[in-house]
Image (cartoon, rainbow, N blue to C red; front, side, top):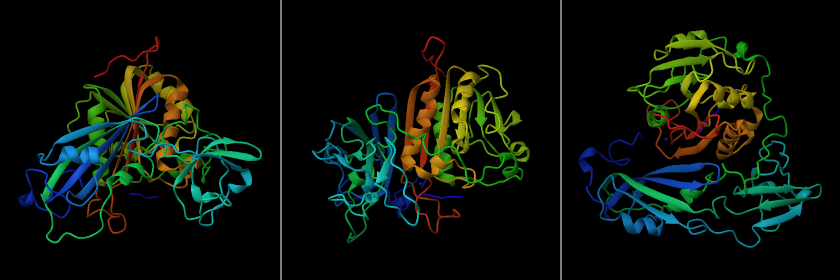
Length: 434
């Protein structure tokens, strides 16, 4: 499996103990702070969460508007600040939108053939050659605005530079700072802005070209039944990431919901205290489904062979799909079917991370930046025209459990990416659910 990078939000800061917890923030404190960055893109609401486990409040640099509100406050306090466009991240500068000769695009990386430029997609700047101010080692993102026969138009600005933002900070834990504090100063703002936030949205509402270059082809084109014939009783996320997904489902699932767990196996990742009415599991392996204790009904069905769901119209109040959407080769048909089997107002929740079975993941998934994959899944929702109230959420920064199999080489827990929306009724509106 392909891996990537989350402490469970309990106890004191990393390196501390419960008897060292402080009551108030101060210059003499180390703090674990959760930052929630909220913004809109016109067709969806977004929240990107980053957890900084060990900030030295005397030395480390928080955004000034947040730092001014957070001192001498108790553990658990939450503060928010609304930033105008360009206030938190640098506003779009003159020259950020550039036109270059098409032949300047295409430097390959690490032995891989260079991709073709596609409208709306992000690429590392070092993919360009012969462009003033751009160097091969530069991995900052650029976005393709337009592709011509001889010229390319690029946007080098941060994808959130022109959007109003709300940044919230929650002090989750405090402990006394170490004596003789040393080490590098941490600047929070780059942690919030780098490596993805903003990439999940279209540029100026223009659809991103995810569809060129055989996006749904796979390394192993054989029928999925052959690959999934043998059960795999493994977890595809670390323990902390699973708990975060359970918490999300617990917040979003309606009470007494009839739930369809799509592309499931031996775990459903539902909250342990869930009050759902029933859970139907649809998956590929009978032994794995039989081992899942929360399922009230089990269906073996290959969606890549037949995208039609063997379920009645409006049979469910909620559908969850956990770390599996990346295997769909007919996603548009499947999402239309999910709308059919959902009652009006019902919620579809899709969660994923950055681990998968390489032979069976679709080609476009492997090529995209992990935040661009959120945009891809949003397109699945929007193509059907049957969902609204679209939301995305990302979570990064939680420490990986020390007893995890990958702890020796991955410091952080698996990141969480989630997209959800509600089934509209025939009048084009969403009914309240839950």
